[in-house]
Length: 504
Length: 115
Image 1: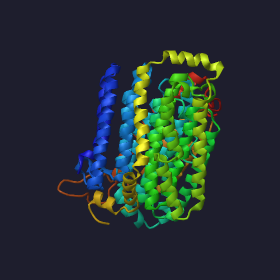
Image 2: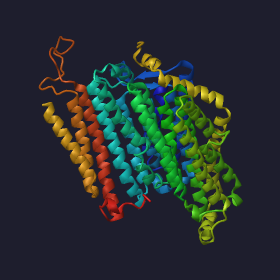
Image 3: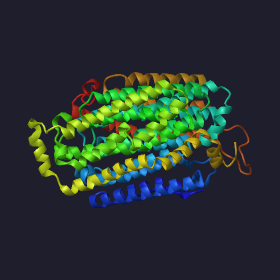
Image 4: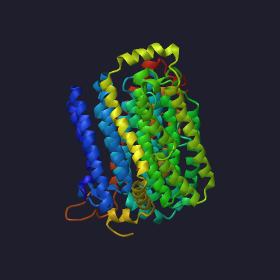
């Protein structure tokens, strides 16, 4: 029994409710945003520390013992993911202070942000599949509302696709939960890990597993189910997009990791072969989509899809090292991708456009921003010694070890194309001179720029950029943590023992 | 009873997918409504239909004397209905706003963010 597991869920709920109490006072809401996410960040650090030193942390809600009650469980994977949620929440709360317009604040940006973080933390920590569905709905409803704040035409059009496809995938998840209950009579993940292999008709288990696979693939934006993402992610304000990019698709990836290691490992030859193909195609289609665009946010949105592929490949290779690589990759991607969106937001503040053809000349006036862009961009492409190199190296090394040469070649090729996209942004936005026909607008935005706002927006960018470098340089401890996570995922004995209290 | 329910659930899923594939956004929302109802009925069916046996424990006993209906799926469905209701309320407001902003209820006219 450990209260530390429940805090990452409780804190955002408490601060979200407080923000609703002070709905008309935006200054109070802003402070609550920073303090609440800061406390969440601290709570998740404590949780990771406890999980690292004392092993898997379990809390039974209302003291109903598992498998009858709902449990919150933090193993290393969950704790690392929750830490990322807390860190991103804090970084984005700071970034939102100057960048979110007063209109958005009036429509409840901060309460929704807290609600989204609560949903994400809950989804990462829950040990019950129906409870997972509920948390997914909580974060989806918050993301629906955040997506349409502002009510522009593009937001409405993007939101219809986003809402429809995500609701569809939630219903698939619900159907899968129902069928699992029909097969086994339990909803607790650890209990399912014991009971699913005992089901007589193993074919049915695989079928239900496929329902979960499709459902979470839609949420993770994996090939061929990712089309809602590039259609909607570039429409809201950049702080919202960054929050989505950091956390929403990762919930899908995390759920895939959880389901296809702990519970649906009955037919690895079939499911994980499928996952390998999905991962490979996701990488390639995402990166090719990014190569076709000249709008910063769209390029980055397609790169989310591409990077999801690497994470799925980490799961598909199914060795401790590959899973560790996948976990490192998730951490790296959350940091680097969010950071790139944040830099994109600052570029917009300075030039008034996200279109690479209309902006330029930033290296001359803002060399610091150029360096801060290069850090996450090179990390994303996998240039040593930054974080992406470590993630890619571990996954590819695991691929070489199981002699899966096709996926190794694809991963390396996609890395090169990622570098091309990043260099494209660099060359167009930073090196190229400002195009004459759009110079007037750039001038106007430069004039309106408040140095204080830029300074506050640069704070999280600097912190995340340094972090990307630190993860790459301090590779050994990070890798060790991820390897423990990988072993825990692959060998569910500890998880089942911690939750049910019996050795399987 | 189960075969009938299976056919009903299948028909609801088929109808909902058909409605969602049409171009009108109103029909899209009708499809979503049918979809969540189909899922609820499916949970109800797969967990076994038991008629007239409420899971109540008579005084003096620890467990019900005969076979009883499993209350858990009903709790799941209740939760799912509440969530589905909230989400659908949002979807209805969303299509109304989208219609106001775009001036069309045709999905084919809502492609400006795709390319």
